[in-house]
Every structure is written in structure tokens, then in C-alpha cells.
Image (cartoon, rainbow, N blue to C red; front, side):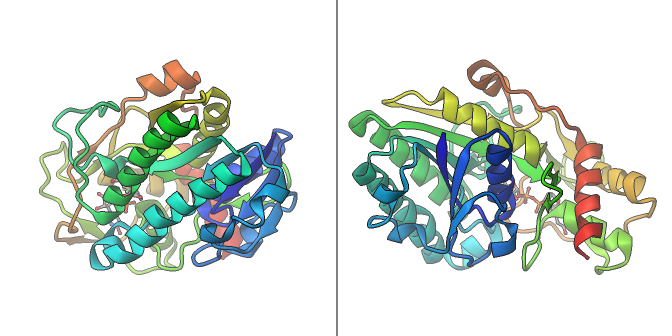
Amino acid sequence: MRLLVTGGAGYIGSVVAARLLAEGHEVVVVDDLSTGHADAVPAGAQFHQLPITELDPVLPGWGVDAVMHLAASSLVGESSSNPAKYWRNNVYGTVTLLDSLRTAGVERIVFSSTAATYGQPEEQPIKEDAPTRPNSPYGSTKLAVDLALADYARSYGMAAVSLRFFNVAGALHGADGRSYGERHASETHLIPNALRAAAGSGSALPLFGTDYPTKDGTCVRDYIHVVDLADAHLRAVAAAVPGTHHVVNLGSGSGHTVREVLDAVKYVTGNEVPVVESERRAGDVAVLIASNAKAAELLSWRPTRDLDSMVEDAWRFERATR
Ligand code: UFG
């Protein structure tokens, strides 16, 4: 297949693009480089530096069969201080993209949605029919796109899958000899910041909240390896059915506390992570664990890489890029 990957210069998008190429597909990457890096785009991909709102005139000439839509603004904290940016980039941007896809006759789309669409559900693990009560504009805007995709599938016959990612971590060390990993300008995520703290190249890690109702008082999250996530994208594009919108959670089905993640970082690096116990971070919920039963049923997908392997791959990427 020939696939368009929006956001293909970003962390997850570059891994998806590299995995598609490794599987023999042709890849066209679109990224405006607002947060991505041109040198993260895999060498075999055709790259266009463009916003997703400007594809109308060019898309018909690219001859793509399907799109993996990962371009988005994705900082939960920033979304609360600047919701307009999130509604514009994530919702207006995506609806404009969907209309360009219709004009070009591209009917298949896999969209990167998020666990943040659920807020804090009462039941764990979280199934796809759990109530959606996002507690950030980031979550609201991703949910708005999920709803738009359902309407576009129903009314225009699109074949759409929303993949709701839980906590993505790790890196791809590719057969092309290159590594693809997390390189955010302002890094907020636990694993890269814990690795930097352990290596002495970052400040001590703030441990946000030690009084949650969990086994050690710290938040529980469901971590998923970025390569497993990319493999789910390949399965999702094959499983997409015209006229249908599927929502599928992607997680391991089990959770780790922040302290357990810090233990894994110590195990992999050999260094203790220096920590400053801090107040809870606004917007964090105590526990988020995915049910991955639907991913298994619909996509025959199962995660194959555990937390230690995510931390090891992220650590290898960290050392290669610093
Ligand atoms: N944490 C710390 N210190 C840090 C960074 C994080 O203690 O320096 C804690 C957080 O409080 C949280 C856990 O580590 O309990 C994981 O935090 P991350 O920032 O790595 O990830 P989040 O769970 O906040 O966010 C992830 C994705 C979002 C998505 C969200 C779903 O990155 O895109 O899950 O709720 F929206």
C-alpha cells in the first residue's frame, strides 16, 4: 500500500513510518515541523513540510491508499492554558484533512486517539464503551475527532479506526541502522525524564503525588511499547471496514506505579533516580489501565514488549542521541 503518515516527523509518527517501510509499504510523510524533526523522517519516505490544512491541492497527485493521522498538538497541560490551539490544530485541522481525503478519494484512516478521552472512569481496565468524560481540552479535542470520524464513516462510507493510546514509551532501533525515539523540546513524560535524572544529565525528577489510593501512593499507568503500537497501526489499516468507525484501546492491560517505573529505570541504567517528592500534578488521575480485549479480537493484536524492554530501548536511544 501507499500510505500518508501525518505527523511522521514526530516520535510515534516516525516509528509508524519506519515500520510501514520495513513491511514493504510506500510512505508519504506530511509534517509542519512545529514539534517534529525533519531528520526523524525515515530515509525511504517521501517528505512534505506542510500543515494538514493545506493538502487539498496536492493530495490527489500523491496516489495514497490510506492515511495514518498522527499530526496533533499533544500536551495535556498546554491544552488547558491554550485550548484554542488544540481546537484549531486537532479538530479544525483534522476536519479539513478529512475533507481533503474525500476530495482525493482516500477512504481509509487510522487516527491516533487517546486514553485522555475517558477522564477517570470508575471501572478498570477501561473498555471502549466506558463513559467519555475528558478532563483536558487535549482529551476533548481527540474525542471530538473520534465523533467526527463516526459521522464521516456513516455518511460518506469512510473506513475509520480510532486507536486510543495509553502511555507510549520506548524507541525503535530499526533495521535501517537508525533509531527513532522521543525528542520533545520540552519533555514532560516520565520515562525520558527519569532516564535523564538517572544519568545525571537532567534535574532530579519531581515525583508528582505520593498520596494516591494505589499500592504505593503513586499513579498507575498502562505503558505500551511504541513498536507494539506501530504494529497495531498496520493491523488497523488492514481491518478498517468502509462505512464503519471502530474505537480500539491500545495498552498492555496491566498497570505500573510511578515508583515501579523508577525501579525499572534503576535496573536498566544501574543508577538510582534522584527524586523530589512533589504535589500532585493538575489533571493527573490515579489509575489508567486499558482493556485490550477488543484489540485482540478485532486486530489479533497483543503487546509483546514489557516495561523493562521499553526502558531499555528508550535508554539506548537517549545514549545514542546525547
Ligand atoms: N510523572 C512524574 N514526574 C514527571 C513526569 C511524570 O511523577 O516528571 C508521573 C505523572 O504524574 C503520571 C506518570 O508519571 O502519574 C506518567 O506521566 P506522563 O507525563 O509520562 O504521562 P501521562 O499519563 O500524563 O500522559 C499520557 C500521555 C498523554 C495522554 C495521557 C492519557 O502522554 O498523551 O497519558 O491520560 F493524554
